Length: 471
Image 1 (tube, rainbow, N blue to C red):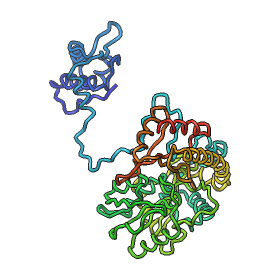
Image 2: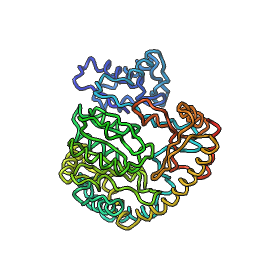
Image 3: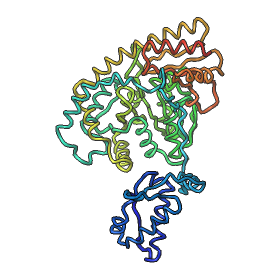
Image 4: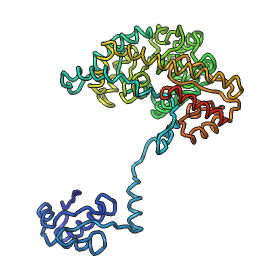
């Protein structure tokens, strides 16, 4: 039953007030057809009014068609529909609150068909069937040996910060210690915190074009002026970065979405620019735990000797995006400031998930998981590249990137206007595939983006067969 309010209503006006409140509840759908109204005696006792008052209200509801009386059972809401009812329901979906900034919808959202996708080639999605359920459950059980401590550290669980510092130092050469690591809600949560701490409205933030749209949108939402910088075979074109730039966001190890690896010369050029112009570099290393080349280039963070690089990592691609765990590695004074911001935003990351991940890393489970899944993803990647090479040689496609890391690659078709049409036809056939449209700021020719995290080798073959027929 809904709440009814008579405080401050004169005795003579109580019948009308109750009728108006009950009628509104019925018209707006809070009381639905078939719902029983409380017995008049019970409602009268609850509201402190005479039973005759409730009887009068119910009689009026019945008389106007909002309710019906059933002998021996009580009073029930009817299936009442009029033009005024529809107008009221429509009005209920609107509001008069002023929204300061409207957030644009993400372009990478595909409407899932009723039966689901036959083949899913969307990017940024690891295979959920590969999640280490047994090891994760063991670590979660160990974490439950002690009850959660209540409010914890805004910067993250100390054990997890230590575990991540050791992991990135060992695996990526990123120099990190406990006090230079902050736990975040994925890479997107990291970018939101950095935008809050580093940017004031009107600051210029340089981004890759094409580049990862949600990161660009996060900074724009905090008032940043976005400067879209073209990407070439060596990475972001540093010369084009405006002098007024406050921060640069890059994906140097596996550019999103083109797959380009930023060259050593371009990395040094970007670091030199950061020193001379007093700007920050945000290095988003979102998926290079899966590497398919012998010797990766050193991260910008490792090459940085002046504290200009903020390193962002995530467990969304290696474990699951549903964990919502990522991290920032930055100078200790910046971590301290970000921690204060974090405390204001959502206080702390979820304790039990952090404790489980800390135990998972410390036990060696994370490295075992990466080795096991790395072999599977490498097999899919190698098969996909071989199949695309056959399509290139027979003239179906123009070219494709070699996918040095991660879980996706891009495909260039013979004509720049083909990608959107091919994607539409493949989607109509039940294959979820995207183009680079969401990644672009400037108007450029589109490529197809093929993610292989969710697709088996057989499904990849079926998808490429559909691609060839859709050209």
